[in-house]
Image (cartoon, one colour):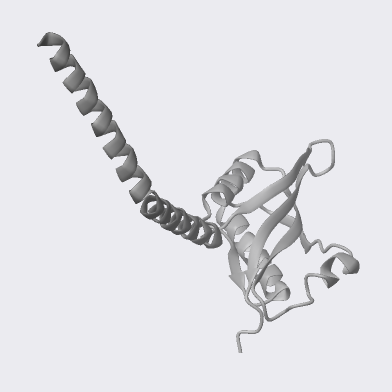
Length: 168
């Protein structure tokens, strides 16, 4: 009796295991489809989040002007005196390939060189505002020239603009 009961339980567990495996194999294609759909949705959300970090403009010249205006306003708000603010463009051959399809949305780096008075409190406030901005601004280089007269801070800044081509 006892051996027969153990054998029945083992047979029952084996049957349950086979049934579970068969169910899993049957449902596997649907599970894969749901997983792919979820991955695709996650990717769409990530792309949307990344796009919100770009500066939306119609062309590179507009993006450069908008960046300069915004940086001037931000420096003014932070009470940081600007001595020089200029666009820094790469060589013409580097931009030729990216200008090949102007009607297609593309991402371009806008580079600026900024020289300001060296007022550490105002500079810190300015950098904090840069960090709080929704669109990304990267400080590629920050040099504090304390020995120069007057002391200055030099910054190489970069932001990414999403160029939409002609908005006509």
